[in-house]
Each structure stands twice: as structure tokens, then as C-alpha cells.
Length: 117
Image (tube, rainbow, N blue to C red; front, side, top):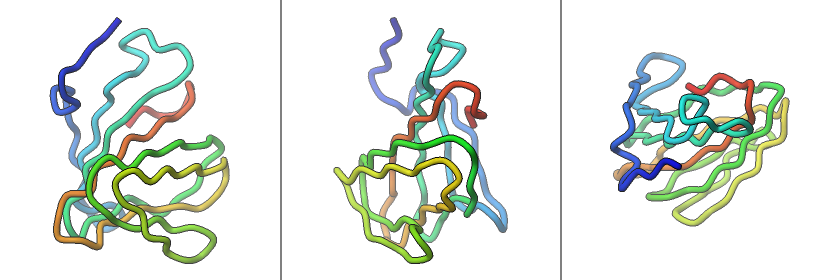
């Protein structure tokens, strides 16, 4: 069993460029912990930041933990905030962005075999 008192205890990786901006990613539960089926990641998106717009074979399950932002869905942007849940099927184009002035934090689950970060 693994217990983190706070997700910020997990090592972080910064992403910042033209395709992805102001994003910090953390694997809080993954293969290194013996998780055989899923990986849980926590992402923090700074104000004005965004994840890359992309698609892939696997699904995502996302829980918005803190703040507010938007998710790109079916060619348009939908508002999300703390407590929102997002399901993204495989091969669906998606992106999240922070259009607020506070940090936007979400948990993201992916299946085994997908790149953890």
C-alpha cells in the first residue's frame, strides 16, 4: 500500500512550450508502486496554461480537484470547475486549459500501457 499525505509529495515534471504551457505533472500511483491496471496522475495548470490538444487510443477519467478551466470537447470549449468529472473515450481529440487567475488542478486516470507522463 502507498499513502501520500498530499499529492505534492510525488516528484514533479514541468511541461512548458508552444504545444503545452504552464503544466506540472505528477504520477501519484503508477507502475513503480505495483499498480497493475491503472495510473493516477495529478496535473496543475497555471493561469493561462494548457495541455496539448491530442488524441490517443486509451480513455481518460478526470476529476477536477481545484479551480476552474475549460475542456475542448467536440470542437468547442466547455467550462469545468472543482468537482467536475470528465470522461474522454479513446481516439477523441481533447485539451484542457486554465482560463482563470488561479491554479487549475485535476486528477487523471489512464490504463496500463499508456505513457505515465
